[in-house]
Length: 247
Length: 39
Image 1 (cartoon, rainbow over the protein chains, first blue to last red):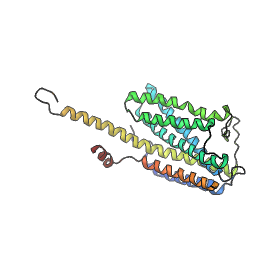
Image 2 (tube, rainbow over the protein chains, first blue to last red):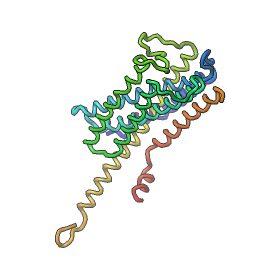
Image 3 (tube, one colour):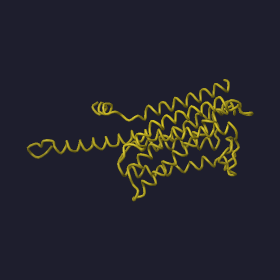
Image 4 (cartoon, each protein chain N blue to C red):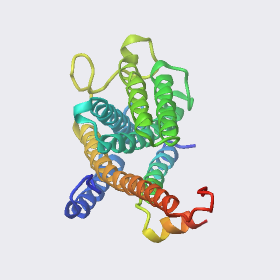
């Protein structure tokens, strides 16, 4: 099993590009793009809230894909199990940011930090589903547990389309999709659209860098746990026996 | 609170979360790992 996801020589240049993209995004979102006619300056929170939500979808999608690949006997590999966990961790962070930034946007625009609206509630459910997934993953590292965790990830992913289509299925306070609406006609343009897309690019680069970092850490801990167990078994075998043969 | 205050809290919180995420996802060094298992 490779100890890294990306070749080592790509990590530093990619990290530098990511920091550059995040900086450019911040400049566009906070300085260049104008305030919104209805939302005022609060629109600047949408340039991070929306990319965070999309990257949460992507992260959980990668977790699900890796879980499927793990469950298929021909493609089963510890790489997919570890990658599923690393991507889910990223997804939980992006989902948490989505809820936090959405609440901070909601207060000046709607007058409330929280509403029991379909989109917001289903996103909160998604957040807790994957926190539960990560908690259960941490309990047991056996192959049997890995299969169970993979099924759990598939179950949790059911909420992702519910979150996305909630604004179409129910009458919601949350606005309908600005870009990925049923007509696929973007309702945003100019420097506002640029700020949004820069956010998506910057967050995607961040996700790739962090996924590699988390994967590297998880592989190290997996290999260390395996070698510690091997060492413990060998020590036990080599222990001197008592006269009656007991150890 | 003004709109800019909410914007500032949001963006600063986001960078703080990213910073903590970056720090906590570092690969343990052998020294860190061995000192944990010796406790």
